[in-house]
Image (cartoon, rainbow, N blue to C red; front, side, top):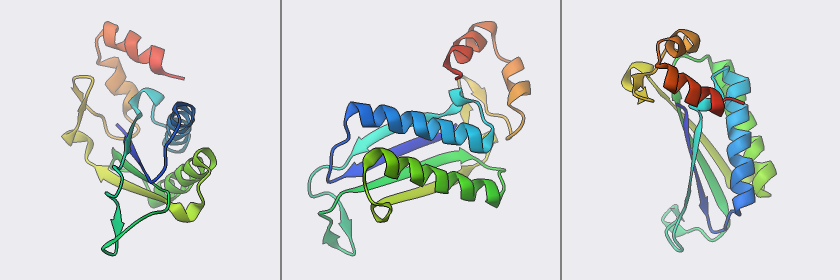
Length: 146
Protein backbone atom coordinates (compact mmCIF):
# COMPACT_ATOMS: atom_id res chain seq x y z
CA UNK A 1 0.00 0.00 0.00
CA UNK A 2 -0.50 2.54 -1.44
CA UNK A 3 -1.84 1.61 -4.81
CA UNK A 4 -2.10 4.52 -7.21
CA UNK A 5 -4.07 4.02 -10.42
CA UNK A 6 -3.44 6.59 -13.15
CA UNK A 7 -6.08 6.76 -15.88
CA UNK A 8 -5.46 8.92 -18.92
CA UNK A 9 -8.28 9.86 -21.25
CA UNK A 10 -8.10 11.29 -24.78
CA UNK A 11 -4.30 11.33 -24.94
CA UNK A 12 -1.40 8.89 -24.74
CA UNK A 13 1.35 8.68 -22.17
CA UNK A 14 4.79 7.66 -23.38
CA UNK A 15 6.82 5.04 -21.53
CA UNK A 16 9.12 7.84 -20.38
CA UNK A 17 6.17 9.82 -18.99
CA UNK A 18 4.86 6.73 -17.20
CA UNK A 19 8.28 6.13 -15.63
CA UNK A 20 8.55 9.76 -14.48
CA UNK A 21 4.99 9.69 -13.13
CA UNK A 22 5.61 6.44 -11.24
CA UNK A 23 8.86 7.78 -9.78
CA UNK A 24 7.26 11.10 -8.85
CA UNK A 25 4.18 9.53 -7.25
CA UNK A 26 6.36 7.12 -5.27
CA UNK A 27 8.67 9.90 -4.09
CA UNK A 28 5.79 12.16 -3.03
CA UNK A 29 4.14 9.35 -1.08
CA UNK A 30 7.43 8.48 0.63
CA UNK A 31 8.37 12.07 1.51
CA UNK A 32 4.91 13.20 2.65
CA UNK A 33 3.85 10.08 4.57
CA UNK A 34 7.18 8.56 5.58
CA UNK A 35 6.11 5.15 4.22
CA UNK A 36 8.82 3.05 2.57
CA UNK A 37 9.00 3.28 -1.22
CA UNK A 38 8.51 -0.49 -1.59
CA UNK A 39 4.91 -0.07 -0.48
CA UNK A 40 4.05 2.19 -3.45
CA UNK A 41 2.76 0.72 -6.65
CA UNK A 42 1.51 2.66 -9.66
CA UNK A 43 -0.78 1.15 -12.29
CA UNK A 44 -1.58 2.83 -15.62
CA UNK A 45 -4.85 2.56 -17.55
CA UNK A 46 -6.11 4.39 -20.61
CA UNK A 47 -9.78 4.89 -21.42
CA UNK A 48 -10.94 3.56 -24.76
CA UNK A 49 -11.92 6.14 -27.36
CA UNK A 50 -15.38 7.56 -26.70
CA UNK A 51 -15.60 5.95 -23.21
CA UNK A 52 -15.33 9.12 -21.12
CA UNK A 53 -18.39 11.21 -20.27
CA UNK A 54 -19.11 14.15 -17.95
CA UNK A 55 -22.60 15.45 -17.39
CA UNK A 56 -23.81 12.80 -19.82
CA UNK A 57 -21.72 14.28 -22.63
CA UNK A 58 -18.69 12.81 -24.34
CA UNK A 59 -15.41 14.35 -23.14
CA UNK A 60 -13.05 15.25 -25.95
CA UNK A 61 -10.23 17.02 -24.12
CA UNK A 62 -7.29 15.26 -22.49
CA UNK A 63 -7.77 14.35 -18.82
CA UNK A 64 -5.88 12.44 -16.16
CA UNK A 65 -7.21 10.83 -13.00
CA UNK A 66 -5.21 9.54 -10.05
CA UNK A 67 -6.92 7.29 -7.53
CA UNK A 68 -4.77 6.52 -4.51
CA UNK A 69 -5.71 3.85 -2.00
CA UNK A 70 -3.69 4.53 1.14
CA UNK A 71 -3.60 3.27 4.70
CA UNK A 72 -5.93 5.14 7.01
CA UNK A 73 -4.60 7.02 10.01
CA UNK A 74 -2.95 10.07 8.49
CA UNK A 75 -3.89 13.62 9.43
CA UNK A 76 -5.83 16.01 7.21
CA UNK A 77 -2.69 18.16 6.92
CA UNK A 78 -0.67 15.19 5.58
CA UNK A 79 -3.42 14.18 3.14
CA UNK A 80 -3.86 17.77 1.93
CA UNK A 81 -0.12 17.99 1.17
CA UNK A 82 -0.20 14.53 -0.43
CA UNK A 83 -2.97 15.38 -2.92
CA UNK A 84 -1.48 18.79 -3.72
CA UNK A 85 2.01 17.38 -4.35
CA UNK A 86 0.56 14.48 -6.39
CA UNK A 87 -1.36 16.97 -8.57
CA UNK A 88 1.90 18.85 -9.16
CA UNK A 89 3.63 15.61 -10.28
CA UNK A 90 0.81 14.85 -12.73
CA UNK A 91 0.81 18.35 -14.22
CA UNK A 92 4.60 18.49 -14.53
CA UNK A 93 4.96 15.09 -16.20
CA UNK A 94 1.87 15.10 -18.42
CA UNK A 95 2.01 18.72 -19.64
CA UNK A 96 -1.72 18.97 -18.91
CA UNK A 97 -3.23 22.03 -17.26
CA UNK A 98 -4.20 21.54 -13.61
CA UNK A 99 -7.86 21.88 -14.66
CA UNK A 100 -7.45 18.62 -16.59
CA UNK A 101 -6.14 16.64 -13.59
CA UNK A 102 -8.12 14.93 -10.82
CA UNK A 103 -6.63 13.40 -7.66
CA UNK A 104 -8.59 11.24 -5.23
CA UNK A 105 -7.37 9.55 -2.04
CA UNK A 106 -9.23 6.70 -0.31
CA UNK A 107 -8.33 5.64 3.22
CA UNK A 108 -8.38 1.90 3.91
CA UNK A 109 -7.89 0.31 7.35
CA UNK A 110 -4.49 -1.46 7.35
CA UNK A 111 -6.06 -4.49 9.01
CA UNK A 112 -8.07 -5.05 5.81
CA UNK A 113 -5.05 -5.27 3.51
CA UNK A 114 -2.43 -7.91 2.83
CA UNK A 115 0.74 -7.21 0.92
CA UNK A 116 3.72 -9.49 0.49
CA UNK A 117 1.68 -12.15 2.32
CA UNK A 118 1.28 -10.15 5.55
CA UNK A 119 -1.44 -7.89 6.97
CA UNK A 120 -0.19 -4.31 6.73
CA UNK A 121 0.86 -2.33 9.78
CA UNK A 122 -0.70 0.87 11.06
CA UNK A 123 1.02 4.00 9.76
CA UNK A 124 4.27 4.52 11.67
CA UNK A 125 4.67 0.82 12.54
CA UNK A 126 6.49 -0.20 9.36
CA UNK A 127 9.78 -1.09 11.12
CA UNK A 128 8.09 -3.56 13.46
CA UNK A 129 6.16 -5.06 10.53
CA UNK A 130 9.35 -5.36 8.47
CA UNK A 131 11.21 -7.09 11.31
CA UNK A 132 8.61 -9.89 11.34
CA UNK A 133 9.12 -10.77 7.67
CA UNK A 134 11.26 -13.61 6.34
CA UNK A 135 14.89 -12.81 5.52
CA UNK A 136 14.20 -13.60 1.83
CA UNK A 137 11.35 -11.05 1.71
CA UNK A 138 13.38 -8.48 3.64
CA UNK A 139 16.12 -8.80 1.04
CA UNK A 140 13.62 -8.42 -1.82
CA UNK A 141 12.02 -5.33 -0.29
CA UNK A 142 15.36 -3.73 0.58
CA UNK A 143 16.25 -3.86 -3.13
CA UNK A 144 13.08 -1.89 -3.93
CA UNK A 145 13.81 0.80 -1.36
CA UNK A 146 15.26 4.01 -2.77
